Length: 154
Image (cartoon, rainbow, N blue to C red):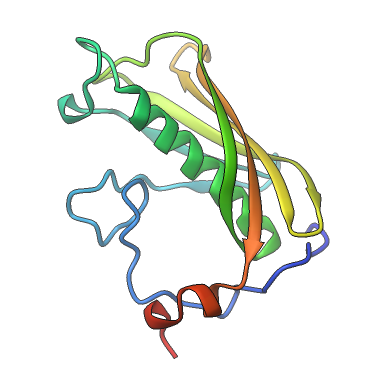
């Protein structure tokens, strides 16, 4: 296990419900993506297909949805250090149109951690392993019990 970064340990923190638009299983109108940790590569991976409701250009995904998926994949990486870290800044490179109704994969990984600052990256790939979009983000570890006090089970 990597050394614990500065921040607030979240191993024993349980939010009442996960209503995140991208990964929240309690959000009936959300995407409900499920991320799995590839322990060997220390990478969070999610395989998915996008339906017509995420249309931007005809037959392809809206850029805001692409950014949301990348943001969530990068955010999952902070779990490696058992912290909740919020997005401070992110950049997205849209390399190729992201198709609807096709198998896709998003992968999030750590670049570096310094104190409460976590720098992560993510990529969306197609079934030929071509990178369609990539991102880099800066996340700041926070104290979730203070920020989300009314949403935490005691």
